[in-house]
Length: 163
Ligand code: RP5
Image (cartoon, rainbow, N blue to C red; front, side, top):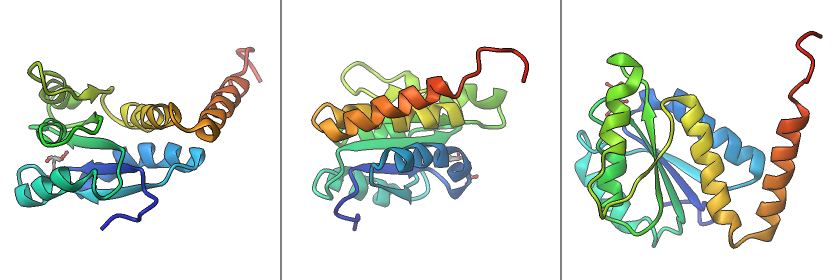
């Protein structure tokens, strides 16, 4: 059962995906957005995936971030069983650094949308930011925190090429 305050579910096909998916968790921490992270494998725990996807809205989740590598069916299968927005993160794999993961997630048939991000940690980070932007549409406080986060990011980028 989810923490009742968790608005974002971060699911992944394996514990081995967590070092990548932590980038989503980290940025949600920075923005003060409650999330819950779980291992939910489309292939190894299909019943867990079904139960999660079918019950995600009732658990109080509003956005799902799903990361997987290789034959990365988790985001698409999850999207097929919920009306919540699903953001897919292709995890780097042994084959061409995750190009297989990317194509597995991005090539959804029309009618079953998955918002697919970049391969790896940048994609996970942006999935967290995108989840926050979706939630901020109906949350003015979060919208302000997002604006502050973006300003801080800009301020942290030096203009000079040398120290
Ligand atoms: C996928 O298989 C997972 O998402 C992971 O990226 C990949 C490898 O999983 P492990 O063999 O490391 O558990 O289901």
